[in-house]
Image (cartoon, rainbow, N blue to C red):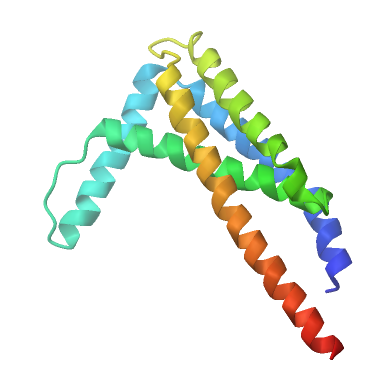
Length: 161
């Protein structure tokens, strides 16, 4: 497929995926403390079983699983937000504040939402953790995009010779 076709598809799929991912994050926050704890306990059990299969016996903290899930959810969100900017803006580096703005606003709203859910609490430390996931996702995708663009421009220059 030609590059223009991929860009057109990206302009449809990336914003949709980003909105759906944010909805997934908010849906996790709407679970009660009991439901969330049960889900974390299930993941802990699965991880411990998987590790014991390889002969590694260890106890995994539910807190580590929860915080890891926070970071991972927002890492993915950060990459999706930057990918959206990249597909719509040729000069994406000048627009880097957009994924960072949304990447901070969403966890603030998410933690605020948790204040209204039984057995949950909104925590500033979770906003910091979530935003660090966004920053990491934006940073890694930025590096990959810069490498790709550098490689792509070298290939174009090489073909013109």
